[in-house]
Structure formats: C-alpha cells, structure tokens
Length: 311
Image (cartoon, rainbow, N blue to C red; front, side, top):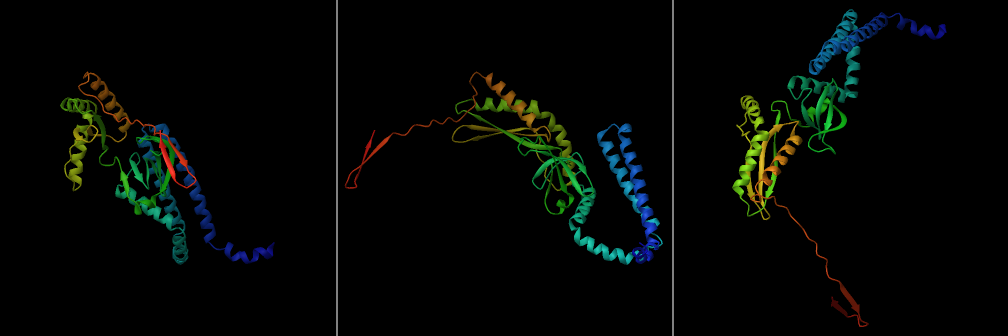
C-alpha cells in the first residue's frame, strides 16, 4: 500500500488540495443555506411574480457568494493557478461552445429586454408563455401545435438561450400586449349591405371597444420609443365583393390571451343580430352538388374498331 501512496505524497502534501476541499465544503454549505431560504419564500411572499423574482435573486446571490468564497480561499495561489486555468479554460471553451453561447444568450436576454417571465413569445417555431429563464435555458409553456387559437397544449418546452443569436424572437406582449385580429362574415348578394355594416360595427364596438382605449395608451408609448407610424386601434369594418358573396371583414385589437373567447363572443352576437333582421341580412354559403356521370358501354369488334354506345 505504501508503494502505491509514495508517488502521491508530493501531490497530497500540496496546499492546493486542502484549499479545494475547503471550497467544496463551503459551496455545499452555501447551497444548503440558500435552498432553505428559497423554499421558505413561499410562506412569506404570496404574489407569484414577486416570489419567482425573489427566488431568482436568492439563486444569483448564492452564486456570487460561492465565487467570492472560492476567490478568497485561493487568493494566495491565484498566481500559480493562472497558467493552469488559462490552458484548461481554452480546452473547456472549445468543448462547451454551446454552453458558453447559452450563457451569453442569458446575458443578452437579461440586459437586452428580449422577454421576461410571463411574456408570450415565438422562438424557433415554438410559441408559448415564458415560465422560467435560467442561466442556460428558457422554459416555455407551449401554445398551439394541435390546439388552435394560441391555447395551452400542456407541453413544457426548454430551449437553449443561445437561440437569441441565431433566430428571430417574436414577442406578443412585451411593449404592446395586444394583437390585431380579424374575422370574415360572408353576406348574400341582394341583402341590405348598409344594414349589415351597421350591425357589424355595433357588435365590434360592444365586444372589443373596451380594448381600444387601453391599446391606444400602449401604442402611444410605442410611437415614442420606436420609429413607427401611428396606427388605428379602433374596430373597423371593410367590404369586399367577390364572385360568390359580399365579404365583410372586422379588424380589431384584442388582448393576446383572449383571441379565441373574443371570436366566440363576436360570432355569437353577430348571428343573434342577423336573426333579428327578418331576412334583410343573410349569411352566404357555397353549396356543391355532385352529379353522377352517365354510364358508357364499350363494344370491341374483331377488326379492332370500337363502337361507343351511350345510355
């Protein structure tokens, strides 16, 4: 046994090992203390948003304390470790390119205002609500996929933070928490199109008019912040006459989380109002009738001529 330990004695006698053990023990103690603090926050902080941010702050403080503790322990050996860390760091940087890019992405997300927890975003073709931002990954509650109208699908998606340097980030709610949406209503030719327009304008004003004032305030801030033209946020009704019917389109702003329920309210009230017109306004639809083709008998003669007898 002594023969195996003899070559290791100089290494074991090196002051670096006790310092490393001290750092590891200190990191474990700091982790236990701050995890207990993070777990106790739910008993003192009721708001979900405040509780989330407090936990993130506690985690960040714990990392800083670990770094400061390690630096204080190795303060006498930093000169000797500089060369070693430089060589090892070059190899690690090459092997962990994606991890380093994710760390840089986390810094960009935090400082560049790409998004924050609670925002609805689309990244890499995935749409969802941001429910967590860690140092390496962003966690989304997915919307869409097989579920329409931006409703939750139930899947939780984790995306590396490095994507902010590779792909565009679509934010549904950061500066302007509203979306423009449209519905199309086909009306038969011969109906009172002016009455139809009044009905649609009235319904739009009643159902989505409340969003206009709120959206206008946010849009005014957008105009001050960005080089962007002023836009109309009030509901509008436009008419297009095509080959089959008169096509009315209602364009309106709506809260980014209420697209589906708003369409339901609009269509329900529109149908109720059209029923009250006693036929002055009627919805159009296309009907296709497939006619059966006649039967053909084919008779072949010996000379190779063909006779076609239709029935």
